[in-house]
Image (tube, rainbow, N blue to C red; front, top):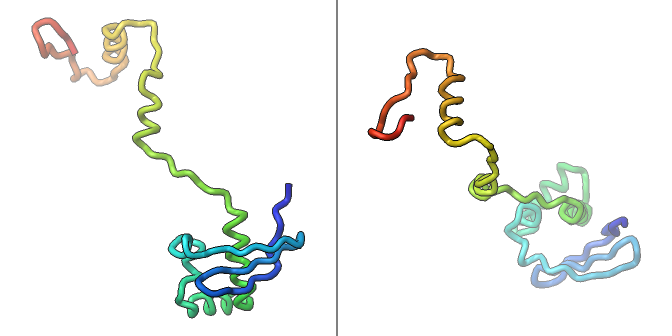
Length: 127
């Protein structure tokens, strides 16, 4: 399903935009909740930045607003992964039929340095 394209933007009072789309749909879009975001931050009261961006891209201000809106609506939201959550998902995911001592023995046997020897930490346990 194709998304409609914004064809006309008319700024209203109180940071509300009137939008017309190529499918004939008309909507009012309240920019206030997004004014600090990465895309709509460009629509803040500082119109000089918007004018400068429009001039650099060889667009009118209304074309620049349309471009900002289209980029926002067509961008795919990226969910940043929380490293702790990703690590905790791995908890309990290791499966091995060997006992802990067999795994430890295997690790020590696979080491190439002869200076690393098993050290007796407790009278009953080797590491």
